[in-house]
Image (tube, rainbow, N blue to C red; front, side, top):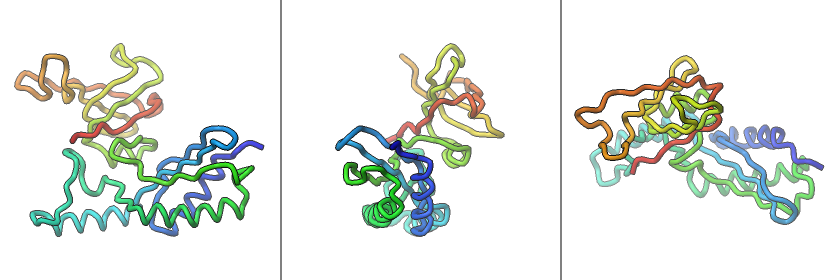
Length: 199
């Protein structure tokens, strides 16, 4: 019997919502005893807003959070080990009760944060991470390439990448002679995209 990832995602979203979390991605890989169900979670919008408020209150103090360059506090997942453990326990119980994974004794449930190099899936992700460095893979070549990296903007379903923001061979990003080199990619043409950490 095949695993229905869409049903698993829907169940994961129900559990996540009850904990103030959102599901970023769900993947099911492997075969036999080596099957793995991976769920990536993050704080929901209210949770991220609380993180931002706390970061603003702590700004300039010894307790201020250290963030990767170019990443705002509200953009981070903010998921703790306890969040993952609690979600995994409740979600694992639901998976067993609803029998969503056939042969449920033979798989591993892994719950984690999407990390700072997280993937972008929906328009809301692109809006939230506007201003970040992003690597985009397209279905068709754009500007002669299928993989492009640049500083991202997102407007009206269009991913706009400033390629001049990325260091090119022998040049510094944003140097005095650098000019904005913007590529526009319709979201429907994006095969996958992920944040490029700036640490």
